[in-house]
Image (tube, rainbow, N blue to C red; front, side):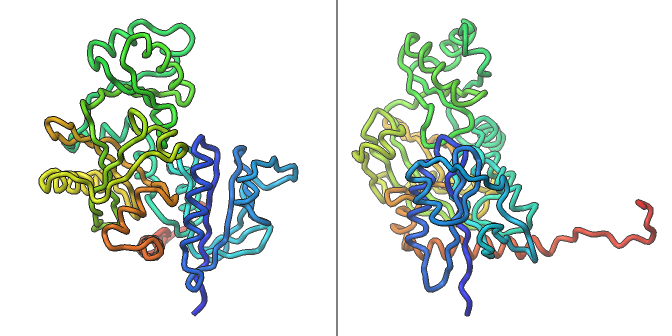
Length: 368
């Protein structure tokens, strides 16, 4: 049998560009070479697509591309993507793109228009999963447990900080709290705030990453618990894992740089808390109409053991230290088999969509 050609898409116009490169490298290393032919496709910081040579190596070296490149690198034929520069055909795309312009529904919409199978959530779920504010509103409407939060626009914060912002945060949220960009991941632009002085500084830093800023109440003595979800209409949930961050919370430095954070899988929590987390994660996954995969993050109050749904990530990290593959490995599914399953789920969803009628049988050509 011929190999399935998997186009791995990485990089992108996002502050999570570098994380994407490491995730993509790990994915390509673990794809079974006897089953799959890998077609690497990188996107640089300016949005240019690189399909020739060694795109991953090229982007990792951080070189500027002086050659003229097409903004969109592919033409389409018979439900497949054909690279302009290398004449390579792919059967399915794996968008290993974290953050904006990749995880937010933009690439998914492009692939839908081109009628190309792809791994992971669709347009709607990707967009909701990226926007922390809309995501929380959906969770709240479903009665899922979330922390208190309020939202501000960047124009209220940059320049002369609106004093009403400080007053509203102190009255409705209080300290400690977190300031977060609404549309970003990997804890970029996220800061824990303990005092008014810190708030004045940190919220301005956050506002440089997005036009919408969310401020959340910090959970006392919180434990960070994560689960992995896999599937389309009937998703499965992994065992729970706990992150022991090297810093006060699981920020970018603790996640990727210092190498001191620890993962405990399975998490040392009660059966009751574990069951609740797994139940809520499945409900959250279905609430945003997710498919393929997601990692769902929780905060558990260290004293009361109350569970709070933090967020859902529709393209979780796939690095060697990432929780998503580790959680499935602990649940009995190896990294290569996990990739097999993701490809299978993508193709199944694509085949189901092909059953949709997209043309009407008209009795007259009224539109002419």
